[in-house]
Length: 497
Ligand code: BG6
Image 1 (cartoon, rainbow, N blue to C red):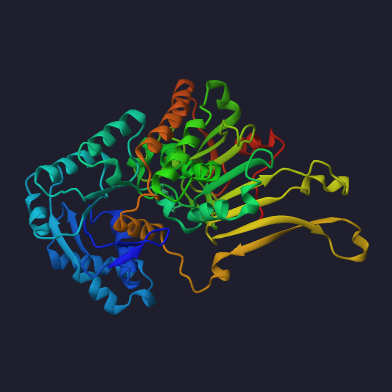
Image 2 (tube, rainbow, N blue to C red):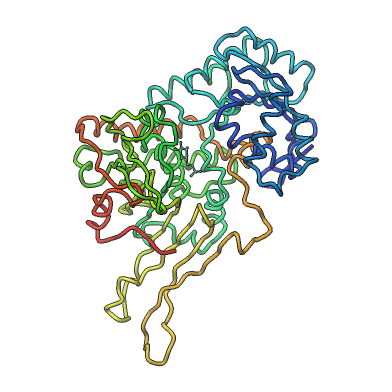
């Protein structure tokens, strides 16, 4: 079966998908439901097969039963179409395997016997064993010149460890067949940033330091550590969220127009942004960066424990669950434009939003009291309630208002503007792109490494200082210092939508 690439050319999507970690949290929570949705929408090629691999004991039937159970809890009842479910389950096979030992990989080879479609290997396992799996697949003859590998974040802990992992994968797969997932790149509204910026001449001409005063990115989560203490306490919010998701958003906002929509054209431009990010120095720490850790509080009327009281917690931990920072992109387009970023766990609501603050008019002629109102803002809401709003100023209506100004949104709410279109989960889009063999929504090795280089500069400065993070109550917008960080520049975090 053929599908189309991003510029409408037909390409085949027929694959054999070998999913390592098929009983893990990500596979059950995201990958199988997403694959099922692709099935339901007729986007899985009829010949495509799915092989689940896990250490646990199962056979094909019990694995199918497990996936069916997962789908019943993860997919809305009205979307769990019976025929699609039968078709989907019939594609599934299972192999029990100890991933770190070569014995057993012959069974994958056997599964592939005679198949002419490309094999896609999805590694939903700890990054430290990516290299082992790739080597064993290669040495047992499971791979060919068309095989692709999909890897999840986090790729490493810093530049050195990520280079080691990337080397191990790269010893088996060429970069053109490595798909590094950053699931934010699969979100509908994140993709829309490319359309918004490069399809609308209105923004094209305004998108630089002459017209934009500052950029704000908030990625707030209500959830806490959710049983992931072991992983999270080693990582912290900087590595977990900023190194990947927030920096990808910065790239899409700050990059120059690519020459076309090819993967490398886009990724070359993103890398230029990452290279131009201002590195952190010790003197910036107190002023431009705030690290926080939540203490017990209330969210939606429910009491929640503090970070150090979470299950399995090390009660001495200094790991940050919140970070706010002021950074910038040191190049011609963005000179002097601060990028304020903040992200945290246990915030009052789940909210991912980018706000572009435009400069005021060079000469102001309205009521002096309203001067602060007088700038446009473009608010891009990634989740929830995906949409775009442009705040414009109009005259307040009424005979007694004179030329009083009023702020109001030109608002495009995706759900009401396009009500019949279901907004797909990020993984659906990413899985489909892997099937098509298209890399533009995946992260290239140099992107990962420049992002680590920048984070490493901050981690090194933090380590030298060895200060505990600031406390913030769960259910608040972070430590007071993160508000002070932006108000010291005469600005505030955007709150209306
Ligand atoms: C993951 C992080 O990459 O992204 C999690 O590891 C985080 O800690 C999640 O909760 C947030 O993703 P989303 O799509 O819910 O914003």
